[in-house]
Each structure stands twice: as structure tokens, then as C-alpha cells.
Image (cartoon, rainbow, N blue to C red; front, side, top):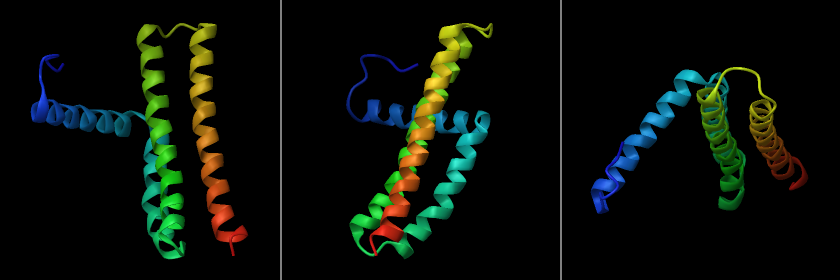
Length: 122
């Protein structure tokens, strides 16, 4: 845990280390995140090739980054819910379902973005 009084470069470096641990934990424990990273690795070169303008390329890549961001947040919610208790509780299930819905919405938005730019924009 970081010292609350750390400032400047030390605080930034600590934040980078904690972020690394977050990526590592999500990679190890969340298959969906690994699949979405693979999607990112495949789609980024495609976006750079298929996007005609810088804005199109950024939107194509950014829509997949949005999926990764939402998956990281969903994984954090799931970890907290599981930490609180593994027994079935309506609110725990609701929290996980809402997180899943957020990931689903980000995937739908990515698909709409790709379809719009690659097929409707031509």
C-alpha cells in the first residue's frame, strides 16, 4: 500500500507499479480480459490499415480500448463483491450483472463504431 504522504515522481511511480499489478491480476484471473486483449491486438493493425483518417483510426482503436477499460472496472467490481462474500445475495448478483451489462454495452458500441466507419462511412 502506498504511503498517503508520497508526492511527485514517487507517487507517479507507485501508481504505475499498482497499475501493473492490476493488469497482471486481471490477465491471470479474467478470461474475458485475455480475449479482449487478443481482440485489441488483432483489431489495432486492422484499424490502422482500414481507417482512412487519423480520426477514424482513433475511433476504431478507441472503441476497443473502451471495452478494455470497462472490463477492468467490471473485474474490480467482481473482485470486491467476491471479497465481501461468496454466498448468494441479490445485491451481489445485481452488481455483477450491471458490470456485465456495461461490458456488453461497450462491445455493442465498438461494433457500431466499426460498422459505421467501415460500411456506412464509405
